[in-house]
Amino acid sequence: MSQYYKPHRNTLWNYGGPNWRLSRSKIALFLECPQCFYIDNKLGTARPAGFPFNINSAVDALLKKEFDGYRASGTKHPIHDEYGIDAIPFAHAEMDTWRENFKGVEIRHKPTGFVIAGAVDDLWVNPAGEIIVVDYKATSKDAKIDSLDEGWHDGYKRQMEIYQWLLRERGFKVSSTGYFVYANALKDRDGFHGKLDFEVTLIPYTGKTDWVEETVLKLKECLDSKELPVAATTCDYCTYRGAVEVSLGRMSHPEHSAAPAPLKNVKPQTFTRASVKKDETEPTGQLF
Image (tube, rainbow, N blue to C red; front, side, top):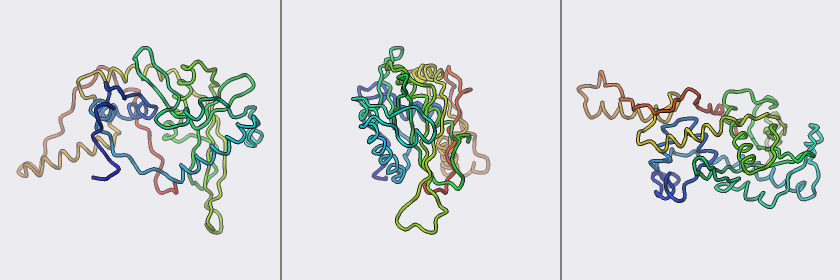
């Protein structure tokens, strides 16, 4: 087993344990596949995680340092003037906590009793006192990035909407318009020369948070059930588990290998998956 993958966590961190809390990424997992979400949070067996994107993390860290300089001086970043944004980086005593993984902007959700949290990349504030949610992204594409119109961008948008919802639950006045600071590594240079040049663009997005409350309630219904929910038909992890079950069945009963019995489906939950779809992933084969 890989030293990086520990499939069975301490039960203190499972749903019902004192250390469990609902993160932004867990909400995303529920939307992607209720079955994987249940196996992870209720049963304590997580999906294998991918290796971290260290260059993306470096871009994220440097952008935070850069904007922190303007936060300290209470002045606009040049990108604000470039795009005509009347805002400055938001200064708050909890800013470092809100940006820290496993901490983040945290609330106690009264209808469910859940502690719900999400770590933001940045927050700005406009003259009306509205908080603006900002998310950093990094990639490398040939075309200029000035829109989020691919199917897999839906996950980015929901991510921002959860942050907006959390901040409103904390009592802040939050702008419905947030921004993605997108750093695109350019490949049209004459060589590497020990550095990457980035084109940085600012992409606005108007979030709608009305789905979050309903999703959290459905999520609790899922966790409180004793039945395994139906897997999302688009979930590659569940498809793989099913395919392995068929292959092992053939191995155990070679006389039936020509016509293996179909997989038994689990009983459906009381909630439906009509509004649940998998976040498509960004196409592979890129630098980041």
